[in-house]
Image (tube, rainbow, N blue to C red; front, side, top):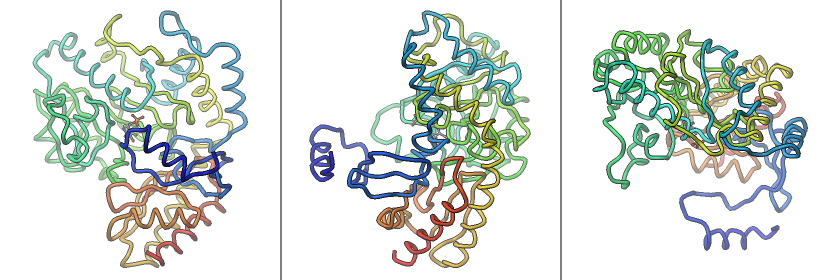
Amino acid sequence: MSDVASLVAAAQRVLLSNYRQAPIAMSRGQGCQLWDTEGRRYLDMTAGVAVCVLGHADEGLATAIANQARRLVHTSNLYYVENQVRLAEALVARGFPGGRAFFCNSGTEANEAALKLARRFQVTTSGRPKRLEIVAFENSFHGRTVGSLSVTGQAKYREGFGPLFGPVKFLPFGDVEAARKGITAETCAVIVEPVQAEGGIHLPPPGYLQEVRRVCNETGTVLIFDEVQTGVGRTGTFYAFEKERVLPDIISLAKGLGGGVPIGAILATGEVAKGFEPGTHASTFGGNPFATAAALYIQEAIDRLGLLERCREAGAYLANSLTRLAERRRPRTRGARGRGLLQGLVLDGDAAPLVNKAREYGLLLSAVGGNVVRLVPALTVGKAEIDEAIEILDRALGDV
Ligand SMILES: *Cc1c(COP(=O)(O)O)cnc(C)c1O
């Protein structure tokens, strides 16, 4: 396994070539650090794409997973799963009173469930069966399966797959007038990220999501918040919508939910939840004892370690450091933006060369929205690690 070149060659023979991958493979981790198969250390500001909220190789998570695996990994949803019920209770108690949960295995599946539920609610339950149109936003990202892809507002992801799910109407994100005009009595549902992450870390203007909520209420439209990336504390509150003082009708979650163990979920209000009756939707693996044990451990750890507060503090420190770096490195940089530990450094051009250079220097980052370098470290990240990341970024900026 230590010969990366032969691993890459084998991968190119037996894997589909749908990913653009760096020519390294990781062999172990600890907190915000990773070591590759050749023993090189990296500081990880990607956390597996905003997934590993406790960092790598967390001892408590490892124990919770191991203990559950020794008892029961999977039973299907033919029977009740106790962990699933406890997890639903915990997610509802985080700030979605009266909510009901459905569990699946990824972000895109959570959005599929959200879209199907919204459709079924309008078509069979709300008395508005003609309402089929989904309103989504330019620059959004909701996943790669056909339904989620259809509402993803980036043409490059949708091209070449033939007819997708629809009708879908895309509106400019953050434009109040466009929302007032575009969300109508024909609209089934609006799907929106509280902070657009993959599209380049775009924050909504103050009051914007409240206005979207108001128009949805007025028109009887189901409001879906895609919190797959922003949820589970990433922006400093458990749900990003808490800061906006607005409640959606459906929330989708995934990335951070299991701390790296694949699990997705939707929560729906009691009213909208009526759209699903027995037989209308399902997932074989969804909410299995193993994945929900991991997610329950994450729930407990967030409180025990005070991770929401730590995320707000570390996020402010990171945002500050990035802003100062951006000022020092003008005109290569245009600024920094984000919320909590979802932060971006905005460049004057393609972010990929900087990401590659930083990796050579031992810092892992990812590029989003073309010209933005994204930093989404574990919620446990320390100030010294942030300082180290800024120092390497600065050096890499000097070189590209
Ligand atoms: C990552 C992401 C998804 C897709 O999640 P997968 O688990 O990759 O299917 C959907 N929505 C948002 C906002 C995301 O960031």
